[in-house]
Image: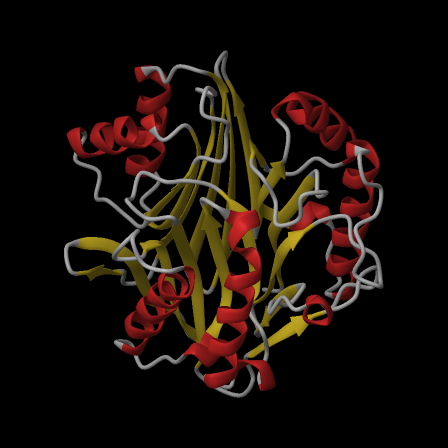
Length: 370
């Protein structure tokens, strides 16, 4: 069962998608803001959604100026909402005070266990009849004074250490996010460290996780923030596999260790998580440089064909994040994208992993079979 509910207000709009299977309910909440101030009314709506749906939040992402993170967290605590892994990303210019959106993923019908690294809440574990799942978020390096490779390794080691507490290994990682404050300066070194780490763990000969790597700061005292999803199937009938992109080459061809998408298939549903996708051709080159509209169109076509390989369309989308490099392109990008595709999506301003990328899209989609 797949149900979408839309609600609009003066300063925000909400899209809620409910997915039900085998007595379990997933809820995907996309909360978009059209404001540079966060009202108590908007926060009350957020509290109401969490409190009255009967779900427990597994994972969350927020996009906008870092000042809003503390305001939101304090308001949730004041209203006795149990906290959850909450990754906050500010990719905007220093003078930008905008709040873009919040995405919440919650479940009902399973036992939830929250996971801490020392005093920091960084994860959530649950299982259904098909697999064990661990969602990790807001992971940062222990020291900003370390070299690039050490900070990247810190994050990867925390991910590995945490999933090992529930009998998982790095071979079970299906999805990652890396938000780097100095992305363009770091990206080469980051890719080298990630590739070497993945090689040591046997990931490159297994399947490579889907991923997003975007420039952004966070309220944490860390230049690199990571999130991840680990999936461990309970039997051989559950399949976790890479999905290619018909319009693009493999990212490994140009030294980036991530897959274009990863798909999870079982008797009840098929779910795909699509990596951050930009205007890249079959040779790995950036195309339509300096043309935001054509980059958006090519990205939409690329993602559409990835979805088609799993017999899905954009109508199956449960979550999407769209990154726009230049603040002055944000309104144009939103209008053009929404004229092409109607999905629950949060747009935010952020530098992407190539200086000539003007737009990037990532999403998750699901098709329930029973």
